[in-house]
Image (tube, rainbow, N blue to C red; front, side):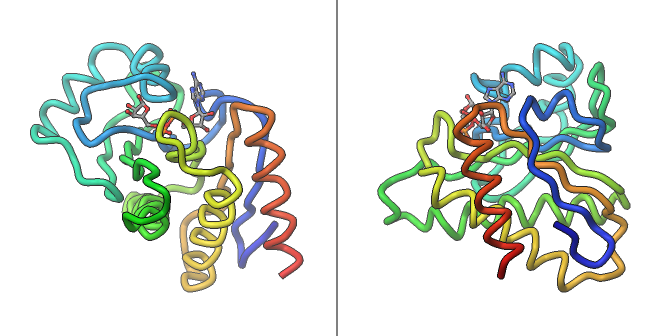
Length: 180
Ligand code: AR6
C-alpha cells in the first residue's frame, strides 16, 4: 500500500533481516534485555548495545515511548526500543498505548530523517495483546501519521512478521486498510 510517497509492506521473517535504516524492537520498560525479539536483538548487536542503553536510558522508559540507540553489529543503523502495553483484557488503555508506540517510532524516524523503518508486531508475543486487534491499530496508526505528513523522509515501512499467523493477520489488515 502506498500513502503519498511511502510504501507500506508486510513480509514474512525477522525484522533483523530487513534492509532498513532502523529496526523497531518490542521491549520492556526496564530496557535491560529480555526474551523474544529483544533477546534476539541483543545477541545480534553485541554487548555494546547494552552499554549504550545503560547510558541513554538509566531508569528505563515508559510504556508507549521509544528509546533510540545505534545498531552496533546489526546491519541497521539504529534500534528503536519501545515498551508495548501488557494486555490486561483491554481495561488499561492498552489500545491507546500500543498506538503511541507506533506513533512515537514514526516521530523518531522523522527526527532522524530516515528513509526506511522495519517494525515487528509490538505486544503480541509475550505481552499477549490479541493479534486481530493489534494489527489494525498498528497499520492505521502509521497510515494516519503518513497522511498528515506528505513531506516525510520515510519512503518504506516494512512490517516483518516472524510467525505465520502474524503474517496472515497483518497481511489481511493491510488489505482491509487499502480497501478503505
Ligand atoms: N526474531 C525475530 N522476531 C521475533 C523473535 C526473534 N527471535 N522473537 C519474537 N519475534 P515479543 P512483546 C517477534 O514477544 O509481546 C521481551 O522479553 C514476534 O513474532 O518479543 O511486546 C521484552 O523484553 C513479534 O512479532 O514482544 C519484553 O519483556 C514481535 O517479535 C517482552 O518480551 C514481538 O514479540 C515484550 O513482549
